[in-house]
Image (cartoon, one colour):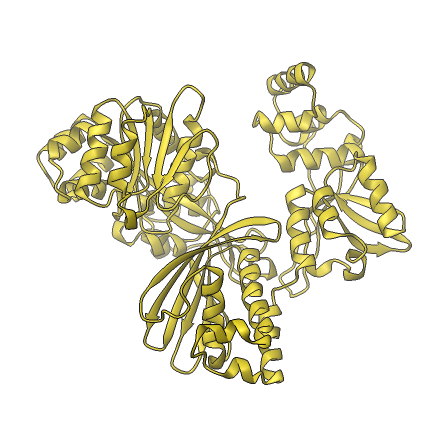
Length: 598
């Protein structure tokens, strides 16, 4: 079999991005899609025959069936289709490159629905990014709207939609521009401190503030921010985004606009804008760049005004399977075994924002089928899971985790997920549920897996109850992925390797078969941070007979951890070292979240 090498146009690290273009191997053009995927994506003959049989039974496209069977990925199918049709494949598209005049000819709703985007002119022909070049109706409509012939370039639908959002609603610099415009216009009404809430509602000069807040929300969604911080200082107002777990400054609006901005956010969240002395919590539900975004708003009074933090939850985000969140094979096998049991407690532990809920959702999705009844009680319900009953707690009316869990036991559940075990009452009900034949998933806040065991005892639960009900604990952290476009190979020193538990470079090669590691650099694609996206590192503790005996003796967490490690368990630092060696992250990232293992 001939090896296939794709010719990538490498993206440089200058301020001028370039499209990442993949050219088709000529000798495969026109060949059947299955044959191309066998050559380029390692598709096995068994999986191909399974998909062909499924196609004969239900119809549909072969590529989509192969993706549904998880035989190949969407991008591999798209690349193979480009080869088959002899079309260039766009691995990435940058909004800055797209011709704004061409974009104006295509309505945004049609562009999103049809998954097309005009990119540039080549003579009299429009270069058009398309996700389905075989859809002749869409191609005809595109020619009619553009008034010119088109030359298709194949790209993933998700790539096209992301670029459409960036092109049609360019907002990366809009917030700064709006602030400059407001300052230059010298808006006296906005400069005035709001004494009564109705002043903001009555004034005609609020439009720039509305546009500024909307722009910040759009920019946050575009940059994959998880939180927006609006922080009043003595002489200025600071807006920061948390992207991939790290806060970064965005803009500093003039201090005189502070009350107007805060009031606008409070109005959107349906909070009392007259109340400035007490903390308030609210929620904003909006559609942003074609995505449903649920925003949790927290407002607290501080020394120089009201401080607002908004947590963005993308309701349209695809839930990840346990196999897609970075677990090593041994950890995944261990989790698979415990989540398929009929009873017991499985705990996920880690700090706030470490991806615990995502892991629990992944576990529920993995076992979700019509044969079992799954119920969850959460704070709040972050993602809707089909076929699962989900309830949000409401402490103000007495609906706590404990109350919800107690009610669930009368709903004939097989599996229960409790958002968090915070107190003795919730812990005891969860344990009783597990001892009466239910599988319970939950989270606790501890530094490592062994700490979760002793945390339950510290809450007041009897050690024999913990030992008899707890089946496994998964500790996790999130680390930033090093940007694949600008990462750079280097030879680490022995001192650097020792920080992540690798004695020297010889051990690095023997253990992981690599001699060099990657370090972050920074480019336009990662906003000069050197990182893009996050992955998890994990520590799995199976509560076997030996660990149960230690729990019954009420030993400390360090003793439990040492026992598990002696039997081959991997710590967070061990898993982090594996990801560093695999080129997924850097030593600095792993050390920033695993200090307790040093």
